[in-house]
Image (cartoon, rainbow, N blue to C red; front, side, top):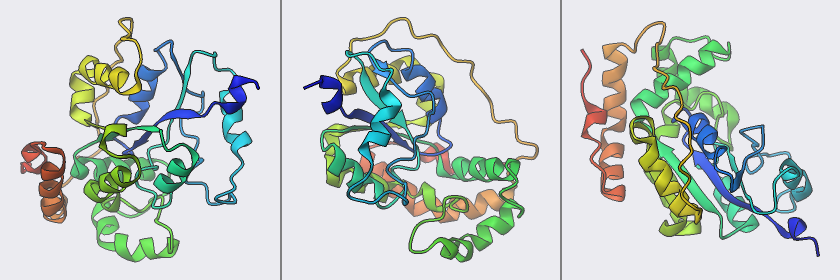
Length: 253
């Protein structure tokens, strides 16, 4: 039997949105033993038009038709860790899947998310109004989550990480910090090569580091609101991952 027919995705960058997953995908593409489709986000496991659990696997696998025999298949759809149904679907497809999650300060992530939606004209409200109405607007998508207006909801990482661990165990889930990926990508990439069982790749070209120059910075009032929202969550995450995230809660002037 042709070995490509039996081949499956080996790894997935599953989140979080607005946490450097595009940059990470660009790094991963440089490793000769990795194949990522040109289309960064396949949105297969959060596709509610598929007939789960009998999804169209040929549709998914067709994205990897140009992969070389020695390359691991991977993709990066950052909604995957947030979308309630996705982890079980991924596990059903490949229980040996290796997952990579990049976590950003949820306060910064929420503002970056709102800025993106505003630039797409998907969001017409101010950030303050959007935060105030998030719960109300999110009900429009029930029983699913809201793909657009989930500014704060996506930042509750601890429950998402626990769900990944439930299906895949801790060994198959690599959790990285967004700031480390930005500042010391070589160290992060080494941990990824180890996680995926790949040869260390020394010829990875550094990416130009982009800074978030927003038209207007987050207001002190909105920042304080988000600090209150995430105070307990960040404490939970620190205990879960043995991280020090105290800088995530620093006040702005």
